[in-house]
Image 1 (cartoon, rainbow, N blue to C red):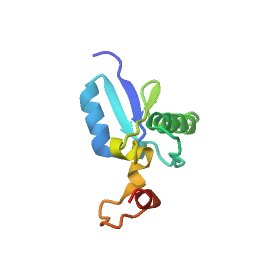
Image 2: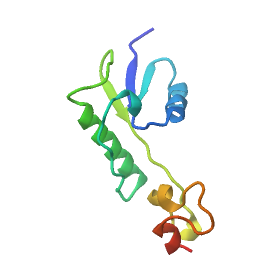
Image 3: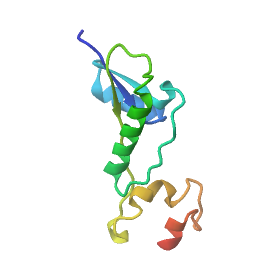
Image 4: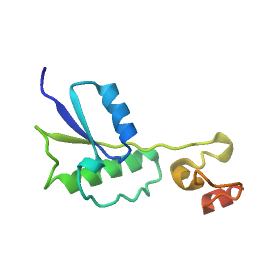
Length: 118
């Protein structure tokens, strides 16, 4: 077998890391933020999903550059961001999907985003 490429997936979601690893196959070793130690939080304040993903990848890569986790070669950082865009709401909640309503929120919601679109 050839060289293995190590990817640090910029998430603490083990299920997401497992899904990506399964898609990529045996030529890749996928790590999560849990494998990287103490890293500064990334504020996802970009106006687009792509902007947030780039911000996560760049922030994590910069934080790791002086002290990468144990790898057998170069380390690459992969990040994503996604959410719900509803045409009838003009694309909302978009990048604010995570703050739109908590999983247990009732009809009152839990954020100004939800209140503004009531």
